[in-house]
Length: 360
Image 1 (cartoon, one colour):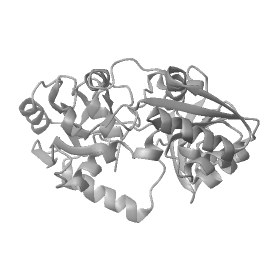
Image 2 (spheres, rainbow, N blue to C red):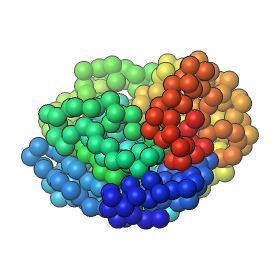
Image 3 (cartoon, rainbow, N blue to C red):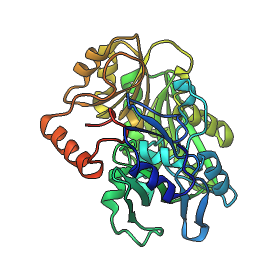
């Protein structure tokens, strides 16, 4: 099924006699959802774009590349830096903007501006009964219903099928530079990232990649130059600086987890405390890429290590199996959390037909 209007989408969901597998571009699907495929790619196009108000309203099946092209024409962007995981997951197709919000997909700049959910102003979606639900607004001053907008972010189609999303957007900066800090071990290198993030110099990226600590600053050219000098004096190690496109390419590698593309093994995404990131990786003896100052670990391991990962992360974070067949994609939830999730799922999808197997 490939509806091209919201009314057709609502009719398809209401008339479904069995489970539905909701799919945008199929580029970032996780889990083991089953059912008849319901594609949202027919719901495409920009509904409203007001560069002066920094707002964008777009149909959920619109390719991300199209959205980014429209914004770039006005020197604007989605601030949360959408990751492209096709290379990591071995997928083809075009990522959709609805899939981005449904996955709450966010890149390195999250440490500064927040995640996709923090940029979302409003949503329209069809719930599991076929009813159309509108929540939030189309401009930044209208914040009615933000909680429901955030609930849909990261729900991966298990609560409703997005038909329209609205975002606040951001102007592209005049300049960008990245400090590359070498000569430090993992613990010291992560400590340098924490120093940078704790400084007053508005860091927009803090990652550790291929034995180097990377610190990004963006903004007016004079401000960027000043912050680079100040950070260089504070972080220690051997510091070099890349700017403009060279810096952008480097962060694209971090954003898309490029070092793990085409390599055998399972890939875990671990959200944790930056202060314990090095300890977790050392205990598992895997190959790691750290983002968000150590708050996000991308970990490459041999297959079948799920139990070890769960034990290493227990009480210190959250692990998701992004690529591989080593066990459950999402870790078991505490009973009280599981009950809450089941209650929310029953409210929005009482028949249990949306992405069955993904949640609850």
